[in-house]
Amino acid sequence: MAEVNEAKREKSQVEDINRSLYDFRYEEKDAYKVDAGLTPAIVEQISREKNDPDWMLELRLKSLEIYNKTGIPEWGPPIDELNMDDIITYVRPNTKMSAKWSEVPTDIKDTFEKLGIPQAERDSLAGVGAQYDSELVYHNVKKEVAEQGVIYTDLESAMHGPYAEMIRTHFMHLVPPTDHKFAALHGAVWSGGSFVYVPPHVHVEIPLQSYFRLNAPGAG
Image 1 (cartoon, rainbow, N blue to C red):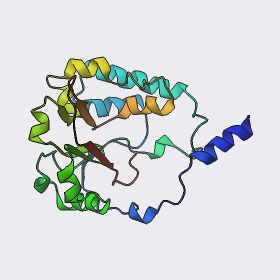
Image 2: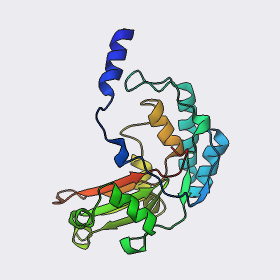
Image 3: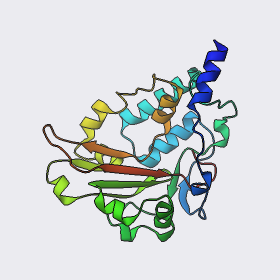
Image 4: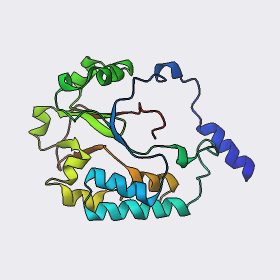
């Protein structure tokens, strides 16, 4: 059985990725970050920063409890050296989210350009979200798509706005915290992300796309 599991791990690793395309970092300019580690106090701190409703704080703490009780999955590459005490789970960049790309700080815009997200691609998408460290810095949807009743916004605005009950009903129901250890980790410390709703019988002809980039050292 051990040999089979090891074979699965080996097959799960992606080969021949040119890491030089991604292994770059700009000067850290975060506005706030939690201490490294994963404790109930840190999860509660993240929840306060996010102004979570009570039900979300409860979900975070329950997810942390599940994480601590659950073993490392047997699938995927070996991660025996993972130490959550060394990882910073929430870093807020020193900028606010904007619907105008011109208002995004230059270094953050340069990051996404280097990652191969040119203006032409942004223009050809129905909607674009760009997350930098733990928060979205840009989110926009084309007017003609929004007029179809399609909702594409940041998850937190949706959770605190008119879609709050929809999020409470569906959040982490497809992949619940009990699914595996890292689903539980996500439930405990998630931040940012996009909320998408397409009404029945509506077809979106061009893609909606969200991008995610970690820049701060030690962030995860």
